[in-house]
Image (cartoon, rainbow, N blue to C red; front, side):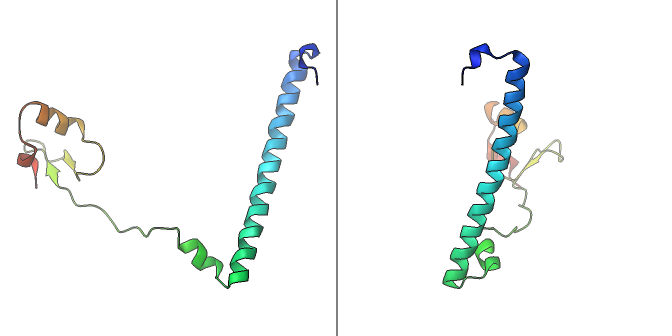
Length: 102
């Protein structure tokens, strides 16, 4: 297909058609994969709910606060993830992070 002779409108129309076809094919591929997974699960006798639950982590609840700013108790951190700005500033100011421990 020679795209160089097509107008901008024709190219946009073609682009829209391609997007629609991609969505259609992606849905078909997902449906086909789902059918294959179900067939495999049935062939080995694994109930689908057990198969699906195996990959899901149970939510364990909230994580306790481990660090709190001594002057502003609303600034707190669990110790997980990136250090909040106020913790970083505290440590860069030469103060020990242990002083923030709850």
